[in-house]
Amino acid sequence: MGRQPCCDKLGVKKGPWTVEEDKKLINFILTNGHCCWRALPKLAGLRRCGKSCRLRWTNYLRPDLKRGLLSHDEEQLVIDLHAHLGNKWSKIASRLPGRTDNEIKNHWNTHIKKKLIKMGIDPMTHQPLNQEPSNTDPSKTISSNPDDISKEPKTASTKTLDIISGTTTTEDESSSTVTDQNSSMDNENHLLDNNYNDDELFSYLWSDETTKADASLGDSNYGAVGGTLYDSNNISTTVSDLPIWSPEGINDKDWMFLDYCQDFGVHDFGF
DNA sequence: AAGATTCCCAACCGCGCGAGG
DNA sequence: ACCTCGCGCGGTTGGGAATCT
Image 1 (cartoon, rainbow, N blue to C red):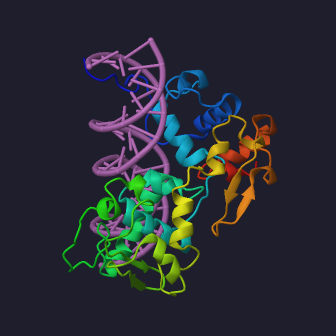
Image 2 (image 1 turned 120 degrees about the vertical axis):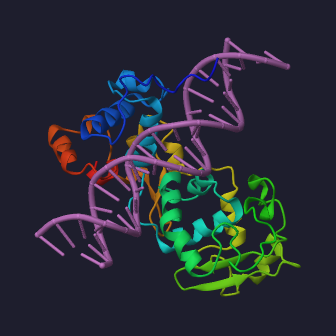
Image 3 (image 1 turned 90 degrees about the vertical axis):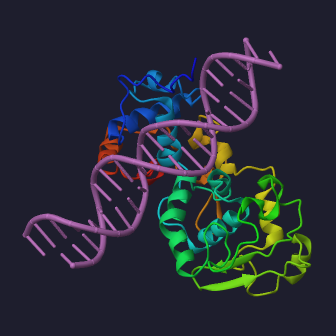
């Protein structure tokens, strides 16, 4: 019987989104939410498949998205998370508020990967390139289940590095655990010594609490709900502090402005 | 200035998973 | 237990932008 295609191929537009399409999508979601992506294009008057709409929204139009290059801290966090999780971009992205899995994936492939290789680090194993990896699957370095890494002691040698300063750190695999690493947090070269330490990091990473910014998106009334956004230094800002973003608040002038700003996310329009 | 090459990233594709019937 | 459906994830690609020759 085969799998039903996500959309009927005939009459479904592909390729870059136009400003008009963006307007329709934004307007519809802000008015109605996105209860069902499959039905959304029809309801919103778009000749796109639901999947395409979802991607456009999550990767580009969501009001809480940050734009621009990843900060140093964000890059460090991505590297560390990748060392533990492997290519679990969505999991990594979920720990970087305002960043999407696609964005992180692209950044990894175009920037971080090259930096690591240049430094002689295998981007997949996070081991020196000329060294035979002890375990080639990064997701299995700590645990076979990436979700369980907070529960297990770190037994493998984990080499971390600061790609900006170029320093590397090798943790002592023989006795180090997540817990007793806490006692050596004053090691200046320690993993994520910029803003993070393992204990805080992992308790943050593996807490059940999703980012409030994301949570706020579960509600169709995005602009009005409370939530937390973070700037590049992880300094939080409550959504309620931000300008109200609602379809009613958009006038023709705003939409004209959109025409000139199609390469930016919704929040860049100043709503 | 113009063509060639490389880089970058938005968007697409196909698969896996979970929920619900 | 099985099937279908919808969503989300990770890998890949196409084409515009930037850089090089």
